[in-house]
Length: 274
Image (cartoon, rainbow, N blue to C red):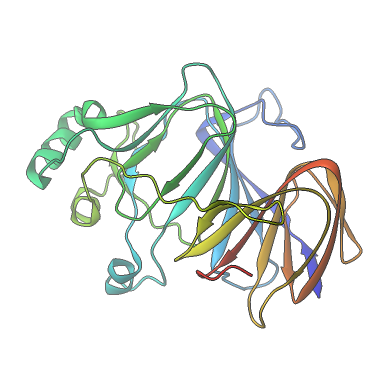
């Protein structure tokens, strides 16, 4: 088995924060706010999945992502399904997922141009512990005051439909073409399994599990990489020490020790549980 502790990449964003989350150093008060922390695999590898933390002080743009077929037609390697584990949220924090009612594309375009698209979206209140799966084609926007972990297909293809007047490029033609402007339907969540794992996502693009602390042995198929994301606690995997705020990739047979009270995420590509 091979365990690799991944390097972090801090991404400055206008909607980011100067106060992050336990496990991460805050940026300097006079520095740019940090909105994202990515975990990067070494070398030139382009893995199937990408793990991020997000820290928001303002609403993110209203956006949408293509599916695999649409991405391939545009010459891109893959589409983008993503999901969010909410770690912290202010009392009035919300996330927009889907539209309140079905919307035709002409109406969607007009609303994106005049800003009324905000009123078409279904803004859902969020709190720590919530989980959402946003499949490709889902129009969405992450609101202010939220800290979350995002697990996604490794694609940064984002089509912005609306950005609250910020001076950034929009992608109305591409975005409206791949949008499915209908009410959001939650992704089926299989739930708890016998050995105390909670299955949050069960394919088709990836599997995401949530584990408590303790000893665990897993066996990944040849060529499959797993991502271990400790939300809290600390431990060891294949002799590599980790703590909350880290991310490791695992291959082969893995022996993982996590202190009591730890809270871990484990993700890997595909649809079949290991």
